[in-house]
Image 1 (cartoon, rainbow, N blue to C red):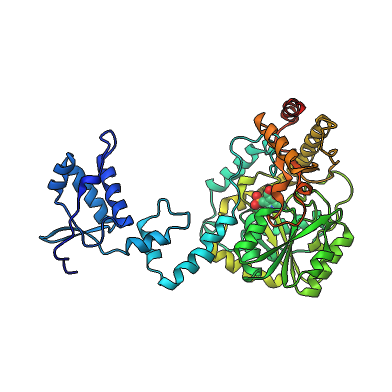
Image 2: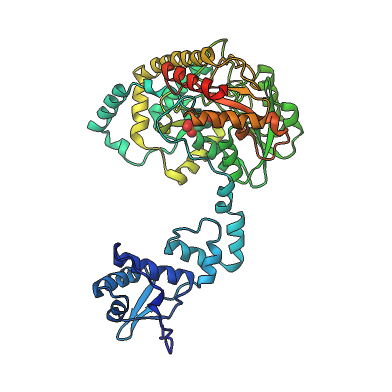
Length: 512
Ligand SMILES: Cc1ncc(COP(=O)(O)O)c(C=O)c1O
């Protein structure tokens, strides 16, 4: 590149350095920022290191090191015998419009350059309709910080997990790993684990599935997200329960789906409403224990839903996230066990039996979909990490899993009873607690949104976690705001004593 003549000169007067901090770093950042925001344009000649050091009253070494870093990252270039210049970079104006998405902090030079190199007419498309814009409105909230507390939703009694058994099995795996298992593996997951999951579902849920239909995932969330990626085309309608599991809705929206919130009544998702929806390709449901209302979908409703899928060629995603927890009455057959035409994708997770951070879940797929799902998963991440799968397989094969489910069910029931028995009766504006027969949480209606907010805030003030039901609705719901109000309480996260203490604090906080 030929030198710019005469070179633009650089005035270091605006650079202020704090002498208590690293000088090299500060100088590097000051110069880098000026290049990125356009105050230093390409071709500007930088002062010789000695001159800049003198102007800023710092050592020459500090300047040399800052220049070296900028040089290594491509912000400046040196021309033999002619000094140091700002390198040829995309213009600052272009960069600054591209980073104006609200995600502009800490943008790396590499990313800036990548964006800046996009054709001009693509820019607004990329920023306004691409993944970056979508994730702004479709993301999961940060999980609550700190150890589990009453009444955190979505966590089981994982204080009861047999960690010594798990540690032993894990140690055994790593002491003598099978080298074949340490190579790249089947994207659908560990064959032995898939076989054991299929056997477990055949006996516990009456599902006629085989190992070949199982794809191991990183929790239920990834299973749902895979369904969204593979079943939803941009603009397709996706029916979701309203109120419902918002994280699933986000996955469908990110895949380009148009969400239709369908009401839930005492029998589950309202199929009359579903049947009126045009262009709906997918229905996402939680039949064994509707999230968050806790309704168990009736058999009649299950059959209606399957008939919808058959008639429209739609897919049903059945999220059986807490199906292990049933306290009375016979469990109803999952949709996947009733499905005669291969329209149901069944989602399961170990997160509610073991613990959420295990990130282990699975899909049971109609045979014709297995290859596509495995291939998609391979592109994303090849397959799940090997040891967790192998250890879970051993945990199941040795009978620990079944034992642990029984222990967890007993614990959850006892913790549910502690909540029901100690709940303050006759709270103004709050319905009676339902006698929930399944799952790890319960939901109680409240007569107004203002009252919901008040109760949630007062609970927070005494360090008790209570979720507002209103946050589970789609934002554009037609249901009047006060009818969306309620409280969602997870009852399994902490032992009975902690539940009683929390209830004591709640009684005081809510009394005034
Ligand atoms: C309805 C529902 N589905 C799925 C999940 C997520 O499960 P996982 O942790 O396995 O991703 C949750 C978590 O609370 C849930 O409530």
